[in-house]
Length: 343
Image (cartoon, rainbow, N blue to C red):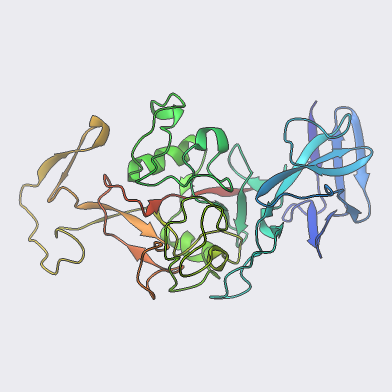
């Protein structure tokens, strides 16, 4: 059944969170088929008696009212249609610079979306709005993104040790895996209608997470210590102001930017003189060569910091150029972003 909404203010979501109560803002008009109903006062959304941390909830609307449900497929009442949703996070957000979050499950305030206020991608689940500017994934990329989407709580993190499924748009069959190099990270996100974060976006998206603090051991799975307890700093300390979880000091994430180095590494202290005639280097999947000075001269931005970094290194503005675009590592994952869409 066709559904559409109109709002008094297109620049805010149809729902507002106050003290743990989610309400519909006045001025919402909902059209379901030939039936139209209006909301004139703040109207509570009925929430499940038991909320599950790390779960996305759809907000369903019918003439009988508004109800949240973890199901995005089966209506909780006859004639109800989805008008929006939100994420019930495993912990709260950071409150200021370098504060980190907490481990108290709650509705993530920046995850609230509606049909006319949402990320510009097919699936709005598992994302938060950053500074009214763009949306980014709450969680690091998981191995089974084809089934779970790019942002899901409690799943195995895709990295160099646990490669992700090859996207269906680039030769995947739902089973085959591919090394998570810079190209694959981009192709996965594009297959979901997203992109990788840029450096300037990451600086804002990761703001509020603890600065200079590494987790201490491999997180293995997304969320707040869903597999193991951090050996140095808890996962919730790495949650940003906007609700991005494991934002810093857990896994590097590939960024959109490319850099170029003519040294063996950014740290070798002996940069080479650029060659008059660079060499041809075959890359992964036999999809062409890179013409460059050294095999790893073209490098992808690495953002946020890794779990085994030294104290003082990770952070919201942390940036590294250590790895060529064809390389993978157990400490490099990815995180998606999407434009903000308002109608």
